[in-house]
Length: 177
Image (cartoon, rainbow, N blue to C red; front, side, top):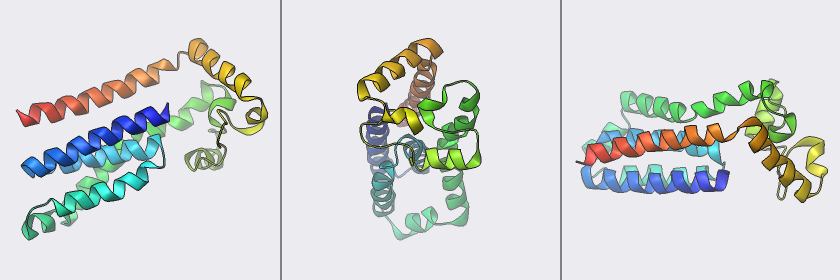
């Protein structure tokens, strides 16, 4: 669920900021950029965390020269690229319109539908689905949600997300040794 993923990404971002503070290595800036991209795709409230994390990297740069390095066009371009790399799971969204029921994500088969899903226009408090199905009782929505997990093997996406987290975590750990 998005809240758990958001918490994992936030914890990884805190670790990344701490590792940058200890080493001042640029790779932590780039890992942080990937995490910001992942976080923005997982839950929009992550944007509230992203700004302080970026500020922390700037404050912890340690010297004016290193701070200027962070704002060099080449570094900014690479950082933007890594942020977009982190947001790649969002590209999967339009592909899901052919494999999963429409009630799970809203309309993902049109540009406007994808934009509505990305902006969370179809979702609200106590709503596990979008459109007309969202008017069903929460118990029915939950039952359908878990039935979909079983029927369509949506768990593979969770396994893929854990693999990405494991790769990032392993990269950070190898770099610290």
